[in-house]
Amino acid sequence: MPEILRENHTTHGAYLALVTGSERKAFLTWKARGEARIADHTFVPPEGRSQGIAAKLLEALIADARQHGFKIVPQCSYVAAAFRRHPEWADLLA
Image 1 (cartoon, rainbow, N blue to C red):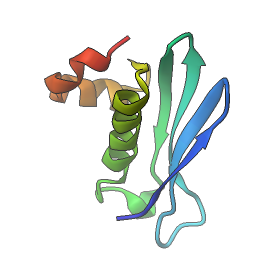
Image 2 (image 1 turned 30 degrees about the vertical axis):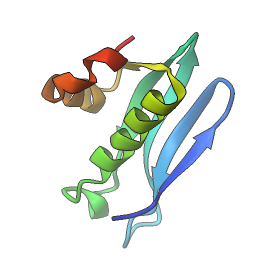
Image 3 (image 1 turned 45 degrees about the horizontal axis):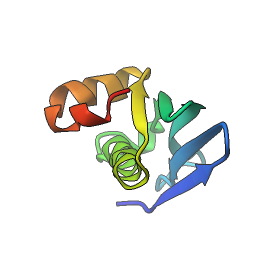
Image 4 (image 1 turned 60 degrees about the vertical axis):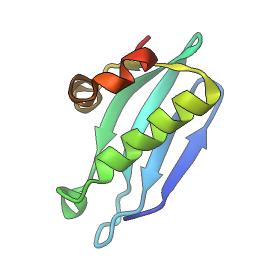
């Protein structure tokens, strides 16, 4: 499983992972809104699909939300579906 890298800027950021066999990285991007982060886009290149990379990106966001105390707005369809499958994350919804 690839290492998850974080880009954290004041107003936006991303979780990134290198994908074997691809020049493009997998990513989950977010934008800040008050004390929340809007998870707005998730992408995994075709070479990395069905390997659980998107789930690992989201798990890093969830872990950071728990550690740093922010809430999540699941604007991206992947993140929204994952929140429906994981009711234990309900406390993190903005």
